[in-house]
Image 1 (cartoon, helix red, strand yellow):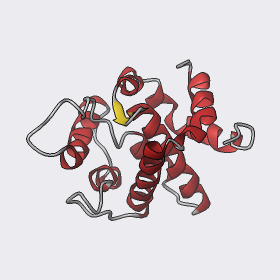
Image 2 (cartoon, rainbow, N blue to C red; image 1 turned 135 degrees about the vertical axis):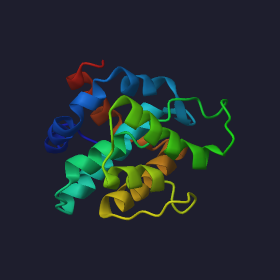
Image 3 (cartoon, helix red, strand yellow; image 1 turned 90 degrees about the vertical axis):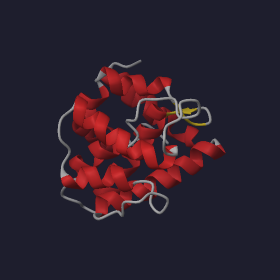
Length: 169
């Protein structure tokens, strides 16, 4: 991705998410591995940036709300490869993400909560109930596939620009 051609989306993305990206726990997502070498921070930014672009193209009125939920969809804050729970990670982490978000940032809207709880569809239990939930589900599958194929690196220039502008680099 070329930073110059993405400028419009980068600006809008930062308008919607700068406060979250500046948060220490969100920044700390960089220490957790998500898919192979990809960190949860990188994956979450890539997914939420993709959701923003799709929401913009679809002219969704709640683009800010769904972009923010997409950024936090994997806010589970543990190393899932080594830390095990009573449920498999695929079922456990959406619930843990919602719990962590609401404990740290406050209540989620019903749309945001459903987005996060259903993003593992069809593997998870919750069904996506909104356009935002479907966008997150689709973006998450695509970006996760790219993480495993090592092609998500194409997002690196945009990721680095977002972090540079937020002061995280």
